[in-house]
Amino acid sequence: MVICQDTRYLQQNRKIARKRLTEKLDLLFNGEQSKAGKKIQKLQARKHKQRQRSKKKYGGVSEDADKLEAQETTLFAMFKPPVHRGMKELDRAAFSLIVPVMALRVPTQSVGPAKQKLMTDILKVPKLRNVVNDTTDTNKLILLDPAITSPVSASPALQSLMQENKWEMVAHKVTLDYSHWSADEILKAVLPDASEAPTSYEQIGHIAHMNLRTQYHEYRKLIGQVILDKSPTVRTVVNKLDTIDNTFRNFQMEVLAGEPEFVARVRENECVFEFDYSKVYWNSRLQDEHERMVKRFDKGSSICDVMAGVGPFTVPAAKRGCLVWANDLNPASHEALVNNVQRNKVQGRVRTYNMDGREFIRQAFADYIKQTGETGATKLEPIPKSTSASKSKKDEKKEEEPAIEVRSRSFDHVVMNLPAIALEFLDAFRGIFSSLDKAVQPNLPFIHAHCFTKCLDAPERDILQRACRALGYPEDQYTELEATAHFVRRVAPNKDMYCLSLRLPSSIAYAKPDEPEDATAKKRKIDEQ
Image (cartoon, rainbow, N blue to C red):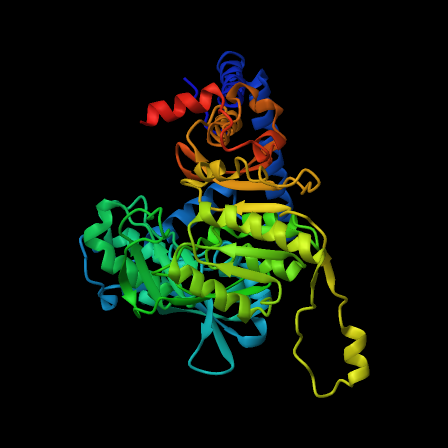
């Protein structure tokens, strides 16, 4: 049986699985004459040629690949940290190790040539120097492989060098402590299951955010301390205690190690954000998605950011030359949003709100259309730049950017970054232009709604049909929508995050409040009741 989960699509996985099964059967029945068998032979021949070139380069000193592999395996076992299964309170002193090895005493100026001739005899351990100081300044010690215990057990090349140059072999002790090993190595030495270690975390400024599984609960303080010790830029390690609240998008957290300081500063997309991580939502894994979205906004566009958070879309969009109306229901997020707008000097291009998302959509569209009808195009002034004493007023005038005109009669883009329930807010756009005079024809905005889907076989269809139900649009006509679904990331084995980008249909934007909805939307309401 062949199992394949390489892609998100069932048909593609089946195709790959069939191909692999065919290759396995071919290898089973045809052996060396199969396609896979021939590939293996070519690979072996290539490795043989590489070994021959290595022997020629280093004067025949290089050993074969089997010996090198055995050497690496032995070294890995000898230099692993001491095992302390069940340790729950970190004891750094318990991780000390002394490994006796032999060393070759050579003059300082001969270290380079000697190492080149003794490629397979010297000690090779990651993060460990194999040349150390001797008792005198004129000599150095080249540490040798632990398999060499005396001149008798040395290779012919090493014995020859020692006899020709009258170099002596001396005993040496390699001392390792807690600082030598990585977080992964330390945790695998103390946790019950040595095959894996929970070392992954999301870093937000100086904060390392972990999401530990229940089996690590009793070891959480030790894990947090190890992560703190091994991460130079981390000062606080926290663990997520519950799921994200859909109202304010924050969660309960526990400090595992370090300072209980939650105000973080993050730099992203050439902007600086500061916020209290314990009160707001921030996900550093979405940096690429933030950048992708902002690049879709042309200079002079108008943006309606419904769930703006602390401003990961708002601030860079404003810097790009867009007019942004941004809202968030969470008071802490709104406060951080206002501060980040000012911190990045884009307050002349951003208007902030702290209200319910649906109410904001209706009010923002009504106010914006009214404002553009009265004033026409909106001009965005250049972002103030820090002045330099060495620059003259004439040079500063040359560097000044021209004002940016925003001519849209309605918002060009609407961003709704609340994946759990963003699609549900699409009902706020039904009849958004229904009260306008026929002479006023504002542009139909592109709506970008982040969402989750568990329908991995046909994610775009699932998302579009859910969007139709929220809009009150005929569900069986979802293919007629001007829309795309962009894959953002996998959040769970059977759950993906997407960004649905769709042009608001004219029939929905101008639908009358008393206009009957389609049968699909009616059925949805009846089912909910």
